[in-house]
Image (cartoon, rainbow, N blue to C red; front, side, top):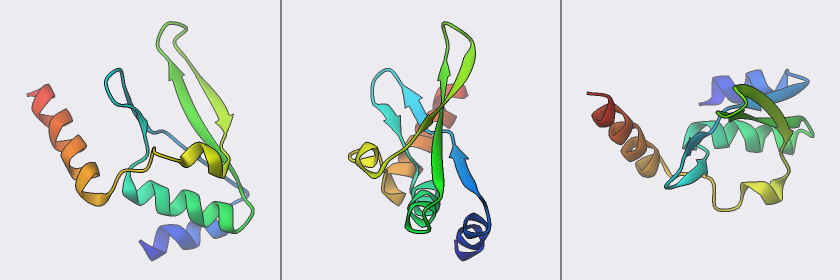
Length: 90
């Protein structure tokens, strides 16, 4: 969405939380990926906020382009992941 990309351009940095589970690992939803790429194009620092369940804390990890490989979900994959989460909760 163009609005959120404009917001990112006006920020000093971007922080996000990815989907994370034991089976599929850490994945970035399609919409958030666009904002991450916008931040990187504009030389903004990007942080992946990673939750450690054992320690019960969040650690910000600076993200580089290479750490995106294989983590970005398509719109269809994003919708499927959300549907699976909703199904598991009901």
